[in-house]
Image (cartoon, rainbow, N blue to C red; front, top):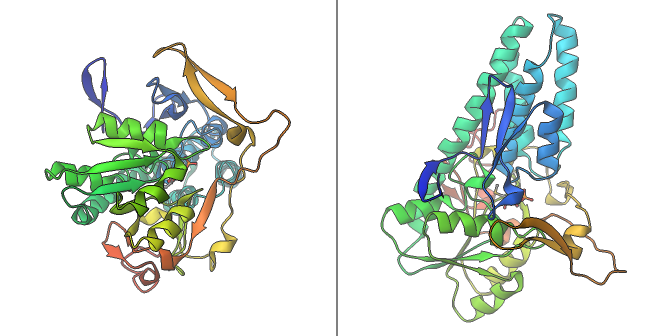
Amino acid sequence: MNVTLRGRPQPHRTVTFDRKQNAVRLIEQRLLPHEFKIVGTPDFRATAAAIADMVVRGAGAIGATAAYGLAQGALAFRGRDLKRFSVHVETVYQVLKNARPTAVDPVNAMDGVRAAMVAGATVAEQQALALAAAEEFAREDVRHCEAIGRHGAKLIRNGMRVLTHCNAGWLAFVDIGTATAPLYAAQAQGKKFHVFCDETRPRSQGATLTAWELAQQKIPHQIIADNAAGHLMQRGEIDLVIVGSDRTLGRTGEVANKIGTYTKAVLAARHKIPFYVAIPLSTIDWDLRRGFDIPIEERHEDEVLGAWGVVGGRKGKRTYIRVANPTSGARNPGFDVTPAELITGIITPVGIFKPRELWGRRRELGRAR
Ligand code: MRU
């Protein structure tokens, strides 16, 4: 998407690969919206650290980063011994997989890369295939987001007020985003609407990232405190909810997404407001049989006990401020699971389905086996 820097719009993608340097290039998301900076990770361990520390975040973006990280690790191998090479690739895979546990996209992306590598008879061939497959994952991510926009735009009518949670925009993917794709497509069709961005504590991805994206695209929006949505729904001020997902179970239609999504789904059901989830195919987990088994990331308590901001004006330094009582601890689950019955529809690149229709549509939705 375009980012306007010093008055000039420039196209950017969240994740790219620099073949010459064998580096993954990432927008440093922890600095946004205060500073726009691109950083490179010099090796696969640094790439895994960038995922764990949330330099890059969002299911699709960490999927592409993991795919590139696997290719990066493979390309760094010196030698011709295929056995030693595959032991090395397994280490790279595990390090990247363990960086963040809830989103399934990194696993699906890396499994795709590994499946493509099998066709190579030598280390050099497998290295080339790994990078080609990672590039293809990134291109497919963009195609999926475009298709989600085409399907989802019809849900948006003139004058609507749309609620979104966390950031499922282009910063959470390679480009365009999922929950935001219908908004961008509707805007291109000339529709007028308003977006409420949940602040999304504790890391505030709604207030920092989604709000920044919408401001860049000139989409009218306001940030609301996470606790405000129920009140607005009760007063008839929200017409539609669209969120993303980190893992959607193909067998049950349950949706893991940023903590607080479940609360919004309960509220939307209570107020009979349509609640949609937008996902690329890489977000579907065809294996797990119940949402309870989805690994939920527990993050550091400091995220709940304080907040990051900038002190000293626009060019100020990013600073952590302790907010909570100094002697109290905190619990910080990063995600929750929304049951299928609370979800009106899942917007996929193939079309919009009821959550429990996914399994019946598994061929169309790309389940390999
Ligand atoms: O912890 P984050 O910022 O990676 O969480 C992101 C979200 O929960 C998004 O809503 C999610 O990834 C779905 S869209 C990619």
